Image (cartoon, rainbow, N blue to C red):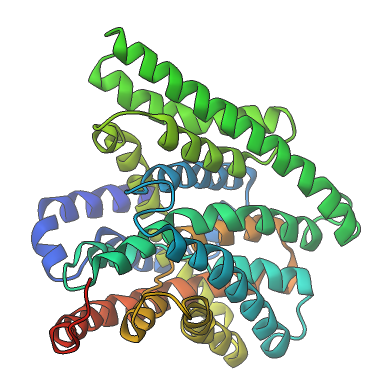
Length: 404
């Protein structure tokens, strides 16, 4: 633990000192922390498993996910569903379910020895997108603005939409004393989700409206406006758990409600503190993945699991996106770009760690392997091809005359 703390702090400080130059070289903080984690992983050995598979690690992962869900929900620009709501809804309510179904079907084919509930957990791990390993693509002006906008909305909402399904699948796949049948798990999950939605709406709306009121009366400072955004997800998460609700859904809905009702042109500046906290927690998770990668490789990886992860990173996303955008105003190159630019990251890591703490035996090992292969595979695949795709599209657009 001490070695990990020293390594994370030292690498983070080194990256911060040269962040601008490193980002020009496409070396983001998550990538650097992965390399540091791999180096430390060679010295930790089996002790890492004991550290990850604890109640403290599970609760830590839960809090991190709650904060990230809130940050994602509040960081959408241009309205509740961005500047192109129809395209965003196609991605969230057509492409996303199709991708989950495709990942589940792929698991039934390539990993037939695993129960369907575990395969559904794996689908929830491999499908959500996260632009931490390829954040520059959302600022790359060679990529059409509407493509970047729909990718931003999708990355902000997909983890929150998937989390109730993930909790349901984990309840069925995990401790059977809590959910002996899928229907029993569903009967438990639905009331939890409904309670969470009500708590999230109440907390998000109340804090947003109270912040608006306090601001009009000059009762707040710039710092207090940032601090209330740190308190919001934790309050929603805690209150939801207190009434036996889904804390993740509550934090996510709280973010949506706060974002919608907070009438401030400076909201992005107010989000700076919680955004930095979320970013710090994110890169710590990337360090954990790097350290876990060493352990995963020593356990051995089956060809079928590798094939599953590679297909999950490519066709499982690309084909549903192309289907979802049929009949839209997006050109075919733009559709292909949206389908290809789907890096995986923090959500996959946190979902994987939560599943690792609940599942047993081969399922526990397969989840760990899947997280490592998908996340590191995405760093290699999208980290290299995303800038190349943007460059190619930048050259293609003038020739085709496609409007951004």
